[in-house]
Length: 270
Image (cartoon, rainbow, N blue to C red; front, side, top):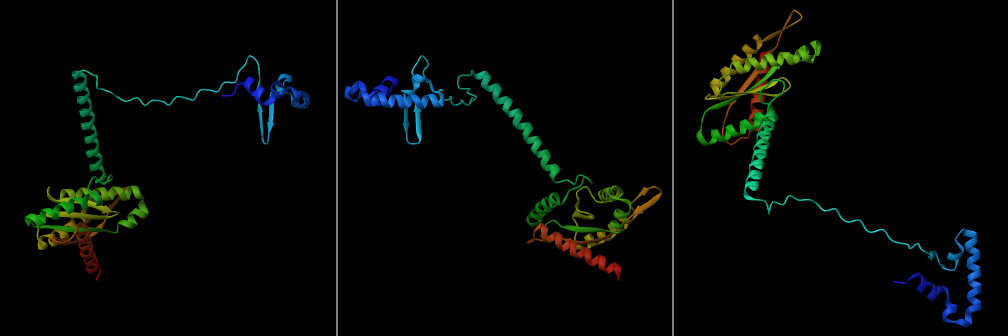
């Protein structure tokens, strides 16, 4: 490290080391002093100003000394250290964490159920129904239980929704969903796939029973109605069904039931 005195002795006061150059040093001193007056530097600082290319280094001699600010200390991350805790405190912490974990697992299960349920009709949505149908196909493939799938599309729902508004349309959808739930067995599964499309998973039913139940549900849905400002509003339905079989996915089976429904809708128009 070069101190101010050493710096001056080595670079700015060459006359102390070379007395014969005193005259040249005095000339440089007067030149720097004149520059210092023009820049507002104190007179005593002029002799300690060294001008280098693109750099001006000023060293002040006096009671004040330049000190650099200490570097900030890195913040230490506090961690929970239970290494020295007594056993009863450790057991209490374990019980607390288990309670929090149990509450979190209950919350996760609740959210998973809500993600599979249609918020308007309180029946399974498409995601939940496809998951249930996938499990049912696995059960069917293992045990060979009879089951079928019915696809339902409402007839005449869009005009009611356009004329009376979505609030009335939602009320009519709720009436249809409640009717379907009440007219199937507890083991059967009712779902809304989207819009005015419904699906029903029937257990212990072969192809003939599924087809007969589909026709029955068309009549039942037509009888469901709501009252709106004295108007009796209802819709029709077209339903088609297929029996479960091995080697297909849930999505494939829904497509087949959808085709059966459209075939039924087409036959009603002719």
